[in-house]
Length: 239
Image 1 (cartoon, rainbow, N blue to C red):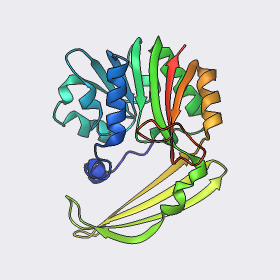
Image 2 (image 1 turned 60 degrees about the vertical axis):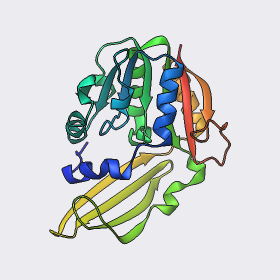
Image 3 (image 1 turned 30 degrees about the vertical axis):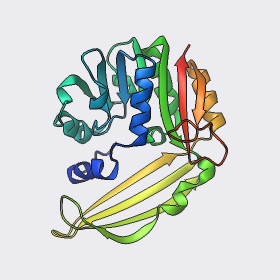
């Protein structure tokens, strides 16, 4: 992958703050008495560091060296083992709790998705819990993502942002973003291909990789999933 621009990494927590999604994963970790945790696609580690404790070991894995570099500098980072890489880079085995948050699963394309699930299953102990969320394609969230010359303030000064959205093939959304730092005129471009998988295909992929789906929620307060829910929150068990 092309790594994130450092200035955009600096803004990541501002755009993706701690909230009810993190509360859900922290609560679930406590419920299952997690002791060995892997946060795959951990980003800046804003959630990851809060999972670590004297009784719980935590590994944060992300393919972005810039994101991991930021994570290593945050308070509490010393309690976490940080790894630059993807699911193939997960160190060791026997994890009893694994998460993929921030809709990170949508950034895992094609055959890499199946491999990721299989890698996780190999890394996890039988009976361990895997949890993650993804946007429900039926809700078509991408219809509201495009905008032109939106202005806002940031820790790097005023920004001018633009987004364009297209659907190059079924189940794939292409998001192109442009950020201009108004003070300097510097412009940063970013392109993402996001996979939108429906609930049934997700469930099939999980079963094929060795997981049993124990619950699918439509929000962070554990409302059972319905077809019009904006997100799908999966809680699975390694079998």
